[in-house]
Amino acid sequence: MMMEIKEVVRLCVCVMCPSYIDCKEEIAFCIAENRKSRCITKEKGCLCPGCPVQDREGFQHVYYCVRGSEKEQH
Ligand code: SF4
Ligand code: SF4
Image 1 (tube, helix red, strand yellow):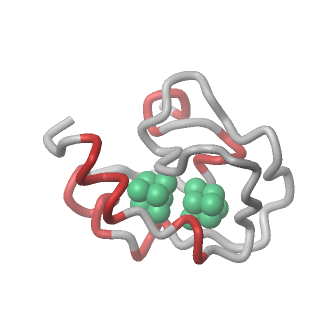
Image 2 (tube, rainbow, N blue to C red):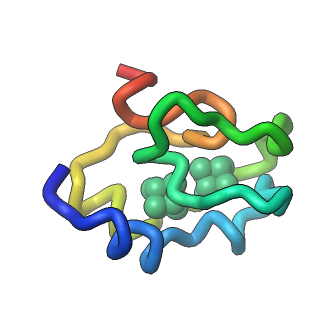
């Protein structure tokens, strides 16, 4: 990964996403290690395709909160 974790967290737009449910979890599910969301289960749209992290890291998946991180989905 090229970006620093705190930079990914800063840019992450998960909290504005229609699928997002806040259960005191961290965000930036694309880089989370073996930690899908325990609360988000319904895919109601994903803002990852418009997130700068996706572009800068060359990530190619979506719904990281439900389906797992970029690494897990490969
Ligand atoms: S790609 Fe998705 S999960 Fe990753 S930082 Fe952006 S909005 Fe958050
Ligand atoms: S990973 Fe995608 S679907 Fe999940 S909360 Fe973030 S933007 Fe929404």
